[in-house]
Length: 368
Image (tube, rainbow, N blue to C red; front, side, top):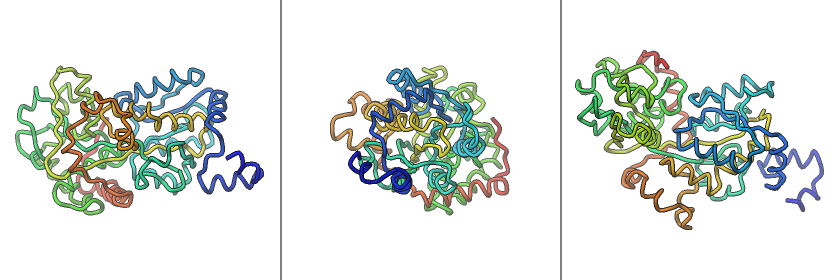
């Protein structure tokens, strides 16, 4: 990179860099600049989501000179993009430096000019189908859609999506957010559609909304944002969420009440979440350092400890870089053998149907 920098001067080098998403600085230079900035602002990173609490703590321990400012941990993917839009002229503490969003939101953010390119040092180990070729976003982890059940209240476990329509599950099932904005909720509906034989995309959105309308009409849908607390209190004893979130909630509740995590029969939906740097990041070098941390062995194993499969999972396992204890704690491999990985285009088509037709087809207003 130094040789290239010597051959290409000033503005022309910067223009070429922006076009290619290449890395202009060495990691040492990025670290020094990040420490000088002294802050990193994150958004939508609950500490019990994929073990982000420990991942953030390990970043702070590694770089004590950088304060981590955490915004709105419970925000959805659409909220994260809106935070960038709303703060593009603001360099204060409400402007996020980095985002963690569902796969379909990465291309949207790029198309709107909301994010900037950066390729981490292990870029080549990230599968091509979960990263932007120009470096604007990259998938870091994934899980499969599952059902978390408070067995104090629901003694008979549902084993498939259509079970949720049974009278015994009256006033029991919830999504994790407003399906017009929450990626996790949008993909739960996609998962329901796929379980009914629909292809991922527009068809899964249509079939999934039909299922949700039936569930709502039957009185089995609770229009409240499902969380570990609402599950424990019995307000939403069954919640559709990523397996890693449900397993984390189960651990936190420690049997009070007991929680079972069910990966439904048939095809199971896998959901990839991507990382990106705001185009207006007040602390761009701290953002790059954060990205390097997430994709490092330490960061990737932090995700695995939170029951997540990661972008570099296969290569790290092959190299013996993932502790066996972490591998043993993951959900059964057969569930992942049934996983369906929708493409970006399929996720975008599903999202358009769900967000555009939820009000007309289902009509329930999901409250916090």
